[in-house]
Image (cartoon, rainbow, N blue to C red; front, side):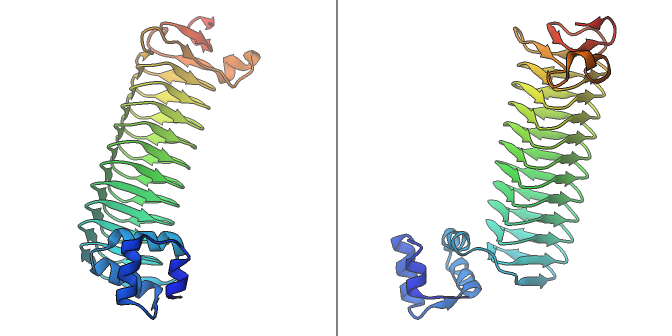
Length: 290
């Protein structure tokens, strides 16, 4: 794709960036070479803007390893070893690494991100498709995944965590913001959120669930230890813990919100070490209907 002066101008670029383009590429330039030139000139934000405007390509770049200040590639990256950038690594399509992926500012892919090691971003991480790491995922600010996110170790997010598919975490899942997942959450360790947890399907946790606001799942919630929320606890179906189930002061605990009352005994059971305080709905396994 060749980007001419009129083609770029039609996208309403910033004045500073357009002047740079006219000074350096008055006669136009091919797409990816222009992205490379912008990055080399320290104009990474302009390169990202250009990729947003003109979209991805089907080009695949295969290399042994990447170590750079930044990289903006319109196609797919396939790296045998590690990807290590000081600021931004962004692709129009997929990003794959046999080792780990690390960025000092952000990791962005239009489609899937997959690596054999860990993913670490000192800023944000966003992917239009699935995110999969053979080790752990650590993101200091916002994380958004357009598909499933899967990690064999821990998943840590320093702000809001949003997953449009399922979240499958081998160990602990921790977020310092809200946790939103449209599918299922399954964690081998603990689930800790400093704010609200909302899940479109169900939650299964190998240890405890701690929620800094309201906890809600459209299906069931199950933890092998305790379930503790500062706000209310709402489950569309069953609610189970081996330890205590505890909501915040003045808030209720609800099970079976999406189940007919006649089916509560089978599909809206509440089980815990002791009967939860302010259990408002569901079938308490010790005493029957609430």
